[in-house]
Image 1: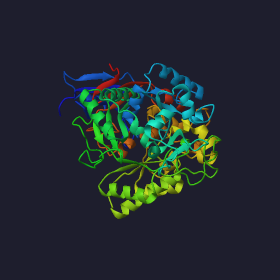
Image 2: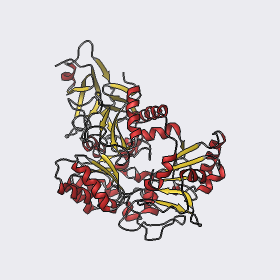
Image 3: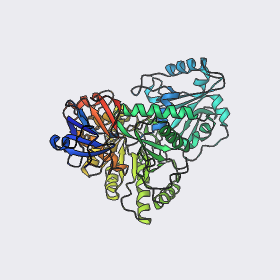
Image 4: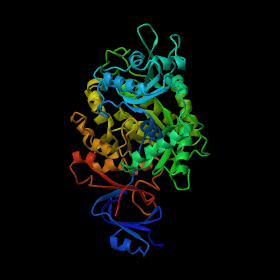
Length: 548
């Protein structure tokens, strides 16, 4: 056996293999793990050129694997747009604060240009409503202003942006979206879901190549700082595909990224293959993931598609008490899309929040498998917020993998309980223990840009289910910390069809590690979210922090 280029020793090395075994040392040859085990055996692989790293008793795990996020878009927003995040994601609590920030930005921006912001949350504001065109016109009437809701499923804009984009009073609501209107029937600036925002987004000036490189660099730095060695770029469009390869070429991509092509957003056959997990670059920095579709929207936007009405409809909203949200596509059209992609060999990852949307997804997967049987497709339901027990039974039988947005319990748990779902349904969002009891492997995710990338916060949320106010939301759905860690390591790699090279510290796998300041299994559960990431290692190279 060739000598090791690096050896890590004197640490709490959690391999996250199937037996959850621990090791005394790990040997690496270039970018691949050479050996794992007793220190004496591993040190026998050293020669004069081997770098021996003393972990000083700190905890090493396989690098965190992101279950679902929007890597490049998150970087673009952070690098080039205005952060308007409402509490508890951010600090903004009122419309007046948003308006003042836009006013200041307009004062330093040439007239007619576009001002873009993200992260505002109507139910996190004192006024409990969205900024409208009238609000934005007050502070920036001579600029094009577009603000993206924290969920990413709704945007609001001012009158100039509406006019330039071609929105009129006579324009009907598109299928799968709603153009909200004022008391006179005119568009009021608030646009729900991609079909309603299509015209607006087509008129926003395209991002330059330089800004895309900044976006990839910014995102990479954000992710490795939180121990994420493998990120996900969900619902990728052609410009983002190009940006990732450009960022890789420029050397600013520190971590690995799996690309999930957005159906109807790009030529998804651009990779020349449909096999999820296919490596697109020789260094395995970029790989191909599942084709992504949307079944519904967001619960906190009231566009998630539920089988029973939302618990409480705010006075500012144009819905009746029987409002259940809606699907993005007609069910027959949706099924045809799923069947066609499944037949071509694609793994699918479909966004579904409401239980009626989840029902549509399960039905489509089941029918597609019946028409065109495939082994080990590992089709995914992204978010899977309000999945029912009977639906979990079907998912287990069909081999469907859920990726749970479990930090919803922290960021929106109180509002799910009080506004969106009511107590009974709120206590069952992200039912991790129900999935665990059925032996369903699942991943956990932050859906960044929606919430900041932070796998340890996901682990903490899965183990405690504490909301931002400190209440425990559905204690019977908490899970052991070890299983939560699997959701950001080995099970997340399994979901991505990359478990043969990622997700655990075992010989032959990539030398991707995260070194933590404390052992998540040894500290009080409440302390997990505060554990420091000491260093992040990708392919044997320290890309964040320092190691002796």
